[in-house]
Image (tube, rainbow, N blue to C red):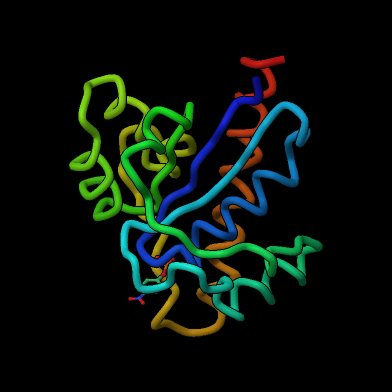
Length: 155
Ligand code: 4NP
């Protein structure tokens, strides 16, 4: 059974599609499934934001085939790890979790780099273009660490 990792942000068009694509590029696809979802429903069925597609492409990763979806209760059973991008996502996702075991799966992604500091991956949606480069760099760095941890734990 592959290990399953879910990346979550608000819209599922900017940050979590990048997190999905970057982490998936660092793990063998036969052993790990990486997916993403939003807490909101505005972008269900939509492609990632063009600015996320572009920054990923610039770094050799194609996220253009992803489609937005909203997190659902079954995700807490289905996924082994759930990483959220910011504190607001954390509150929303933990609120949806029905059991302590499900709540324990939910982690702020940058806490892997900065334990217990609850640093947000800033939402680049309304910001400047370089916000997307900034988000890419953060996610690239933290997913190096997450990929190492997953490979050590599950190989
Ligand atoms: P994301 O960014 O959570 O990184 O996908 C957002 C994208 C869209 C919206 C909010 C955040 N929106 O309100 O439509």
